[in-house]
Amino acid sequence: MEKKKIILDCDPGHDDAVAIMLAAKSEKLDLLGITVVAGNQTLEKTQVNARNVCQCLGLDVPVYAGCGQPMVREKMVAADIHGETGLDGPVFEPLTKPLEEKHAVQFIIDTLMGSDGDITMVTTGPMTNLAMAMRMEPRIVEKIEQIVLMGGAYTNGNVTPAAEFNIIADADAAYVCFTSGRPITMVGLDVTRKALCYPAVVDRMEKVGNKASKLFVDLMRHFCKSQKEVFGWEGGPLHDPITIAYLLDPSVLTVKPMHAEIDIRSTQSYGRTNCDYFGYQKLEPTADVAVDIDVEKFWDIIEDGLRKY
Ligand code: RIB
Ligand code: CA
Figure 1 (cartoon, rainbow, N blue to C red):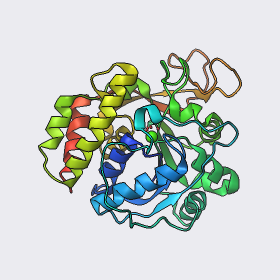
Figure 2 (spheres, helix red, strand yellow):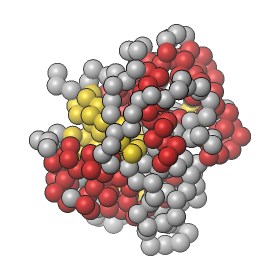
Figure 3 (cartoon, helix red, strand yellow):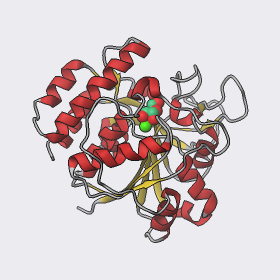
Figure 4 (spheres, protein in one colour):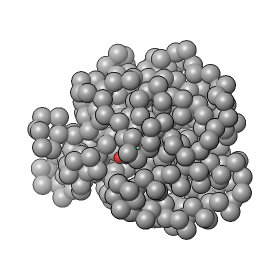
């Protein structure tokens, strides 16, 4: 079966790192490149984190640094969850994997323009890189097969009551992407908050007993500790890899077509993904929004992914 071509745009970030791990060794996916954006930490840190994950696991995937600032607003980071490095916990060998010279936005443009329109854009951080690519070269829009993003929520946010981090961190970029007209699958907090990485899950993955499971354990021990400190949760929601799990097995999610708009106008609800769950507005759906997740199947996909190393 032909592999599905993807570009993973991310802001590692503990859960981004697991998304990289899951995508890179899959026999179903062709990970063309990892493009990095500021988000969980500054770009200087997130690009190093992406390279460290690839180096640690022996992944020959090019890493490109992208935008270090949102399109309009001031930058925000999530050091309370991901730490000062953005990937606190694991100890990596001295970094030798190079960062690609080309800017991530240029890589996205060049790769999409050179494609047959068969590339999936997966974003698990603020959508700045993809939005900037769309603005720099509008011809790429039709070349995007689909956008699968971790972001948003049709219920409550995790930065404000209204807004989730990846969206509010650059709501203007999310607006550009959500109004692009391309097929969108939105994996929001509504389902990611059901995929809680409890200590029992960490123990299960530790038994895989290879370098990937060790990295997973080192990552999750920090991630879960900070989630408990910030939210009081026993297990941290493993947001980002659900996008990859969905590409590997769409039955892991239940999705519902909805008209979804990004609020960039209001103050209190700035950055909200306004999803018309009940179709009140009778508007055309703009996204397939995840409304449920088969959590057991998700953890099986994670374990299967770790076993490929
Ligand atoms: O709100 C959760 C999202 O924000 C995840 O992608 C996490 O990595 C951060 O980027
Ligand atoms: Ca992320």
